[in-house]
Length: 568
Image (cartoon, rainbow, N blue to C red; front, top):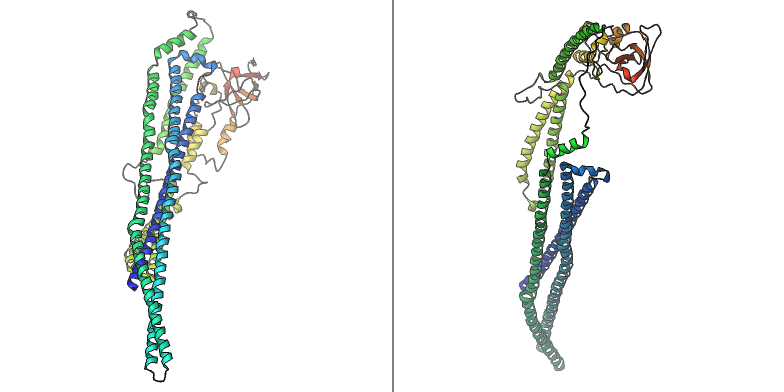
């Protein structure tokens, strides 16, 4: 009896466990459907936002009324056609959002509510059946205990009767009373036995029906519900792809329209349109007659020497430019890079070594984290041997210890190289003399001698300057600019005197070498008048001077200056 009782209790407990597992699994399935519905909603929002941005972009670049003349050019019409096709392209993404909302989101939302109700009903029936079988089992236990109790009472009554009957000192009436009591107890035990037998038969029938009919039917309903949910998920995933597939032909037509618009461009037709729009109809001018001036020969000779000087100067500047362009690439390692990055300059090498050390330290930290986790696992295994063998963790711990040791050795190696580099690096505020010389060569002030007007180009805006022998020899003996300001001493000694003043009539940016930027209305000193090439040399202060177009300034020469003239 005890074995049957234990087996029945085990079945009831297993049934309860299965119901709990099924309840968790079906709830997880419903949560997954809701998560997928949320995913599709976010996809539709992305499609709508994308379509809105494409439409706004197309609208932004649509031609305005004042730009209607663009339609006569084929390339403009092609761009406008592309904008229209792009607008239709955006509409197809709106269609994707609408179809996904109607065919997936609405359908899954409705189905989720239905499956929740169905699931609730199935598990309610299962719990109800489980409660009934448990109640029947309790009633059976009660009948069994009563039968057992009555049997014991009958045995005691029988023993009492036999004792009284054997005692010669007991009266006959007492013996008869004991006999009747024993018979009554035997009858009660017989009735309890019949009741227990009847209820046991009833319980076995109910139990058989419970385990072979009621519960299997409920499980089949839950299984059918779960399979239907999975099937609906598959249909939704298929619809998700089909919605995109349906609009692909229309998107292809939009792209074909863009391609046709691009192929419709006719360059010759557009150029003809430009010619028709802007041709003047004037006759070309005739030849310019020769004008002979007696004093022009000197200027011709001067201009010839100027051109020779200018070409020599340009060749020298071109050679300097090539040298400055190529010098960083003279040292170039074509082979494999060494491990200590010794092929790099000090600062770059320091950064590379530091980055390498940081990476190694990260790897060390990862290994240490794994070691700590395995150590905790081993402690758990020691406290609870049924969870695992503590010795099974030792091989992995040994491997991690070796890895940490290797990484630490590698980190120490790179730290040694880093310390070597940091010990050899120069102070940043003390740059090498070669850099200083290059800086002085590039930024030295123009030579201030009386022939400087012949060393610049005429009013096309460019300006070149031939360095004097003094400037060429200066890099070998001059100090660094960061240490001293003596590089301007020679220029101050040879500074040209002012011969007048001028006022800027227009702003001049002065991007070319040798020129100076001026603002409209600015007053400047004139140190060299126009030599016939359209440029005047001016000075703002002791350190800023250069050339400006003569037509941009109003010049006021001093009365004692040679050939004092006012240029407007």
